[in-house]
Image 1 (cartoon, rainbow, N blue to C red):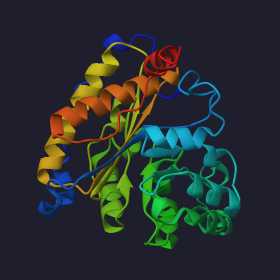
Image 2 (cartoon, one colour):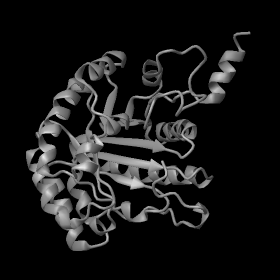
Image 3 (tube, rainbow, N blue to C red):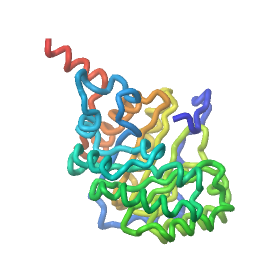
Length: 300
């Protein structure tokens, strides 16, 4: 992912800001000790994760889902997949696996949620809901030109969204977050409609670390900088996640990106190990390239 990439990440202040004052509304004591965690990458294809798969693996998704419990499904951004494709994905994955498919760009970027996108959105929903219990949330990402002047467009789109389908939204225009009037209006809209306000942690856009949780389902996109600081940044997130889990949050979905994608597996492995140790969890730790190479060598 190139979004928010910087030349010298060592010059960036990666300290996480304090929680937004309204974040407390997302906590529920009944979830203390019951938080579910979904951690994964953005893709499963061999080209993107070269070296992650053992030799002779033919079914990439089946192997990926044996190592991770979720996927931020970016493939659906580029084309509208038919129902039978979603059914195949459903059938290939374990019962507790979750997909977070991105809304196709024809809806989000070409039509920018205008009313002409509604028929296409209906088709998209009819297809993606084939995932049934494996649908973690639908992921709507808007481009940087979609500004607060389009609030009513966003509001209208959300008003047509079926309440039974979880929705998470990433907005990128900086005025959604650096203007208190705009941000409060946005967060109110999301809270009223139980929409997850995506937090995007990327080096060059620290304004997107708004720390405003608008539903009990947290959605975080972590973009590494291919720099040693990536590990400290993940440790900072574990500190914050520990606090949230102690206050009561229903689920945390955390997706790790890297410009060199294979390193997303290494970061994920580190993150899950540390999270297990800190919170006493037993999440599966994905095998790294070194693990796979060691396993293959032991066969000879």
